[in-house]
Length: 260
Image (cartoon, rainbow, N blue to C red; front, side, top):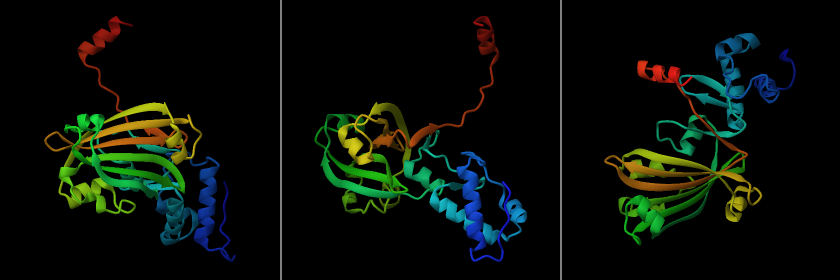
């Protein structure tokens, strides 16, 4: 797509570049996940300084069309939000921050309650033990994308209910304010239909597809600390994974050959 800057016109150069880059993305010339040209090469191509180019890129990052990955470059953001199937325990908000995607959080409830049978069993507590129950909805570009319900062992974080979780992130508070070391977790994923309550919060029809995720997080030493129930909009969410080709051992190669 040919492009020439209007250097005598009233529109600032960075806004012209921003518009040109946006067209590349929306027309699919730069596909989802693709890395855009390096800044120095792009600045040279457009005959502008890197500061001007960076202003355009920063605007598109704020808009959610591009995301910058530290040490790797700038990439076209997928149209659906992705949760990586990774071997590291990274929260949804951390994955958004890592890709420079802005989000907002609305807190529906933050209170100390009593663990029911399910919560107590998963957190290794006695039924009726105090837990901190946090209910939130997270928004990207003004659209609700995920419902988050968290249960935390309250004896490990007394007073946490007074935290403003529209600004703070739960794992940040547990680790920085309470000195807890969250070490590992287990996640299960299930495609399901939105209940009437979930549909209302996610602004989708009742029965629309959603991805339900249950996550159980553990402290160092394998003591459970937090249980998450999350519901992602099916039309705004997908899973992604980086996979590596396994090297076949001699025994496995023989088995595969025998079985065709």
